[in-house]
Length: 460
Image (cartoon, rainbow, N blue to C red; front, side, top):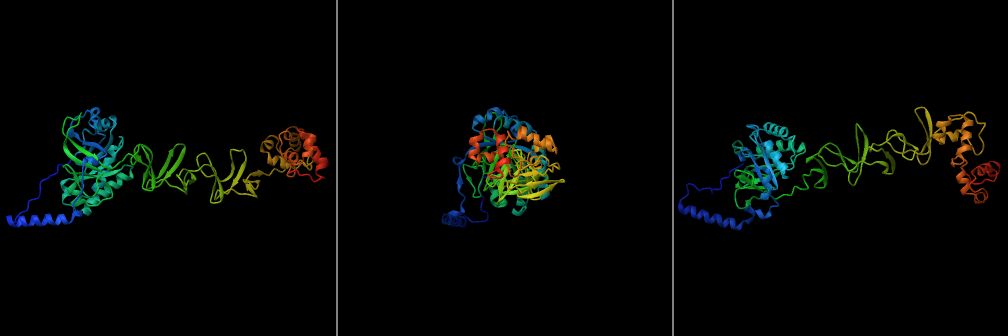
C-alpha cells in the first residue's frame, strides 16, 4: 500500500540567523502547548498483529503465516482501474483456511460520489462468494485525492462506506497519517492509519496502524506490510448470532450484519429494522401476520400472553391469532377479529354458527336439538351437544343418541350434562351423598332428579 515520506520539511528563503531564531521560538511555543502534539502509540498498545497483501507478494504459503504471530490479514480485492487482483481468490481462500480473520480492501481512484458508489458495488460483487470476517476497507491515497478538499474526500468516504455498511459489512478507511490529519479530517468510520515509524503519532484515533512495508513473515516470499490492531473486533464482527452496538443489539449471519428481516436463533425469531437493530417491546406486522416482540430481548412471543391488560394468543410461528382459535388444551377461544384480544361473556356468530363465550373466553357452539323429550332437570340435549364437541361430532342432533351417550359413557366420564347440573360438583359439595354412593355416579344423577333439585342441593 502506501510508502510514506518521513523527511522533515525544509524552511526556504530564511537566513541562517533568522532560521535559528525561528526554530527556538517554535520549540518554546510547542513546549508551552503540549495539547497540540500528537500522543505516540506504540506496538505495546496493540492487541493483535497482522498483514495486508496483494499480487505484489506473489504466491503465499498461508499455512506458515500464523507461525509468525499473525492473526489477521487484509487482502487486496483490486481497483476499478485495474480490475480484480490476480491473487485475490488464492489469498482469500488461503487466509481463511489458515484460520486468520480476513478482511479486504479496494484501492480507490474515485473523484466523484458516483465513482465511489460504483467502487463499492464493484467490491461487493467481488467479495460476495467469500468469507469476509474482518472489516471491508476503503483505501484513499491515490494522487487524485491529494488535491481534493476535506468535504470532497468525506463525501467519497460516506458514499462508499454507506453502501458497504448497508450490505452487512463493517467499513474501515485506510490512508496515511498525513492524509487523515491534513486532508480527510473527522469521519464516522474506523481508521486504518499508515505511518512508517517506531510509534504512531496521530490524535484522531486508529483501529489499525500500518507501521512498515518491510515485514518478514514465514510463507511470504517478499517483504510485506505489517499492521498493529488497537480496536477489538471479536465481539463487533461475529460469525453468527448477536452483537452489541452501543445500547442496541444487531444480528450476524456468516459475518454479515442483517437488516430489515427476520432472524432465527435458538428456537426464537427476532425482527431487525432497517438499521439492523433488534426490535424490542413493540408490535410488528408484515405480510405474514402480526407479532409482539418481547421487551427484554426482542424475541417474538408465542402461546397465551397478556399485553397491557389484554390477553392474546400467538401460534407456534409467533403469529397473533384472531377469531375462533383451538388451543392445545382442546378448547376453542374467541379473539377479536380486529385486535386479537380475547373476548369474554358474549354471544358471537362465526360463519353462520352461534357461539357462547364464557368468562374465560372459551367459545361453545350453540347446538339446538329440537327433540326435547329426553331433557330433564339434570340433562339437556342441546347443552350436552354444545359443550362436548366430540359427542356432537359422533351423535349430531339426535336427542336419543345424545342421551344414550350420557347414560352409558358421559356419567362415568364426569361430563356436565346441563347448565345446572354437574355430577362432579354435586358429589364434591354433598358429603353425605358421597358417603352413601361412593363411586357409583349414576346414583348421584338419579338422586338429583328425584330429590336433590327439590332440596336445593349445590349442583353446579
